[in-house]
Length: 130
Image 1 (cartoon, rainbow, N blue to C red):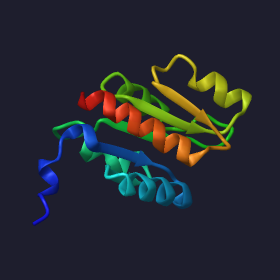
Image 2: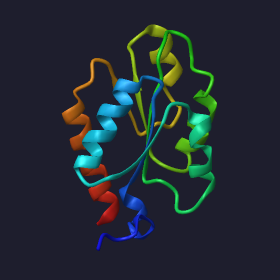
Image 3: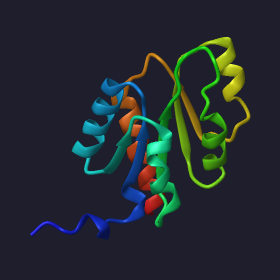
Image 4: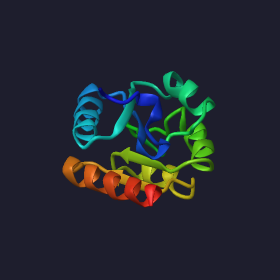
């Protein structure tokens, strides 16, 4: 019999937020294949109940896109004070300057190597378990 999902350790929970369904679907599928528990959302506001509950996710991966600072940047910065936040972004002068100094653990710029990103997630979650 399969174990109840709620009994898995919090260290296995990754929250993924991306407006791009392809990025969201691909990363979610690869992390699930690696045995990780993943909650994927299109918008940060849809994921809010996860951050209000307990236990907290082990990692938040959020994609920000466009040349303008995303409206949820302040929320992401506040979350970065409570848990590890990784940002997926496109290079631009505005984006680079906007993301600097906000407390994000990692910032990845496009083009992304999804297998490298998945391996980094595995290593990061392994650090939290041990």
